[in-house]
Image (cartoon, rainbow, N blue to C red):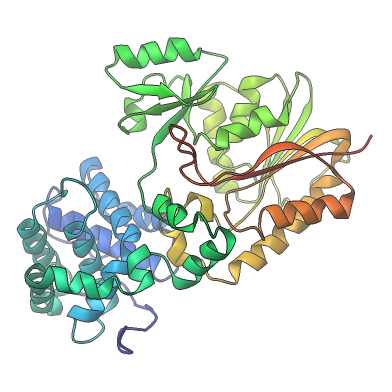
Length: 448
């Protein structure tokens, strides 16, 4: 990458600008996606960036869907797109121009069997989008020239770009190196899995239906699906939650197959006191309550995220005690020990990058140690809250051993904890037909 292209994105983005583009046009969706991508490059996560944009404009559900699709595609192909821009642009474009080009190139190099849009449409609509915003209008001619040159010289440009590992794999170099070090046999499959779109997996509510009954209901609705676990159903084609039979009345929830292992592993019995630390958004809290009549406390430091736990409980007609507090503090605790503790601790989220492709561009190499240190403090704090004979389930959605296996081993030594059978590290994708996220599980019992 030329020195002129290797710079930090620190723009003063005019995200409040109201464009005159038609809301149902590709240009409108491209411009919105580009603004979201530019915000990610300043440190905002992608869902938050999109939510900020939508809050400032009256965007239709269809336009939101298109905007989100383009932005997520762009995140999954950002390494390749930025390598192409470095070849094509005479100097590093301003932040929003670079993001608009990256979105367009992601559509023009889509790995889909059938491209989402015709190339000439993408070029035309990207130029229209550039013209419609004050941060990009002056670069309209350059945007047009870059995209048309890419059309003419596609093969040669891609060949040169893909010589760079960051462009080939679409991850920062440190992430590629970390994957190779941690998983020397599987690193390529892991990186490829993280670049794919995740399946839509549901969790049936055992209080309201059975697997057989729900599969039959889906069949009657014309939705192809298969059971991939005791409570896990994978839809062949993802749909919006409002179209999922039984979702509104709490018959099913959306939850990854790997995440559905947590509640059964805890082996919660009726009447037990259970703590779900770092509980938001509440999928595991709700699953515990679907399987047992337990006294569950759901803890989270973020009141807004904890509110989502409450919304999920309400939809499922379940009850738990919600507490806004930091899991590394004991100030909130009344001294009564718990029979079971679920510790889904903070981590780099490297195992769920296919669901959150922006994570790879937001994380830094030093985050792994910082988050592992925080998680160790949380685990040590929670251990005192566990009753003798009780079980603590340590969960991360990380692929890095420093946050998972090394953390579990060190914890067991510090506390002389008995380690019970648990899956350990799940790799993203997994065995045929399973297709879960990259989670890690370690189960500990406290000596009586």
